[in-house]
Image 1 (cartoon, helix red, strand yellow):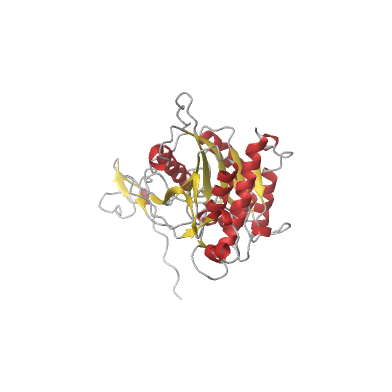
Image 2 (cartoon, rainbow, N blue to C red; image 1 turned 90 degrees about the horizontal axis):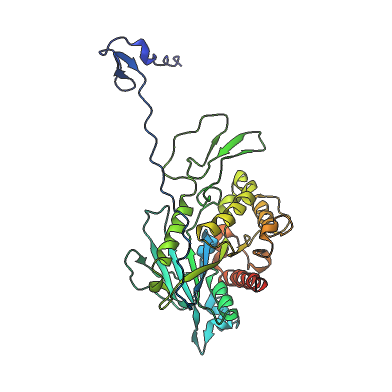
Amino acid sequence: PPPPPPPPMPCNTYKTQATCPPKRCTWSNGACNNPPPPPPPPPLPIVPPSPPPPCPANAKPVKVFVMMGQSNMLGEGKKMGTTNGTLQFAVETEHKYQYLWNNGNWSTSPNVRNVFVMGSGGIGSAISLMHNEFMTAADTTPAPIPGFNPSMKATIGPELGIGFMLGLNMTDDSIMTLKTCIGDRALGWDLLPPGSPRVNYTDSKNMTSTYAAYHESPEKWDASQPKPPAMDWAAGIQYDGDTYRAYQVLGNLSKFYPGAPCYEVAGFFWWQGDRDSRDMGLSVNYEANLVRLIKQLRVQYGSPNAKFVTASLGQTVLGSTGGDGIILDAMLNVANGTKYPEFKGNVAAVYSHPLSMGSSSGAHYGGNAETYMNIGQAMGNAMVNLLKNNE
């Protein structure tokens, strides 16, 4: 084959404007120069912490529980159908979850409001409103609200198990489960909380990668090379969007909990980890990122005493050495009050494998509604126990 063409001559070798190649050089100050680098993109907007406004005198606030994560939390459990694995079959044929049923119809919680907003990316994304009703398994389409796009969600996540466990154990309280999430998001990238620094990870081939800090881009790069140009996504952009969308609900509280005078964020539910488990660099940093997330969410919502419950991926067994096992260990460690004394009595982890009916998080547990119900119940009961321990 012919030899490769020689590399282009440096711009400063051209001495006249006529010879200065305009496609790759620029003529300025009487010389042919390399073009200036493009200006950096404008900084991404942040979502500043916003504590709840004060309640009127003698008013009792709605207890809000913010639910975050990825497709586990989003939920793909099949609701209707007479075959094993649907919620209808579990309730009508197997007689499970009977609190969902009332004289041949889906029951409705008298005190738990179910709200679910979804959007992809940051604060400029459109907001889909998937639920806005008192908790029930019945199909509902939210009424239109300015700024929100109503759409019916035909499958379930853990919200029914979580919501009914809260409602049945906290009958004197007004409660809102506020889910704000979307699928295929990593804690170490899309959901990275503010303040997270760059981290390095060296793999089994002795290759070291740098992972982006909050609002940096791209996700990772060869640590021995300069950082590549930013892409049209950045670390933490989904965190920004999910918290912003929750604020849009809380800032219009009466449209989502009629008659509510005010609110307090009492707790957080987190079911996530599939995307991180597929990258060892994200997996080994999951524990540090989860600790940072818990602390940041409490600052974000002005709720330093809010409880936090996380659940592992349903397919992951204790002792697994893969990325999913590292994430399971991270969750159990964070809930260990000996390792993290500041989390003692206010953080809990649910080991989900015994509660799963099979399949995996990547396959949405085969759409089996019982998996979502079982894990939701366990998460709800874990939260109830944390709240009781605080009384």
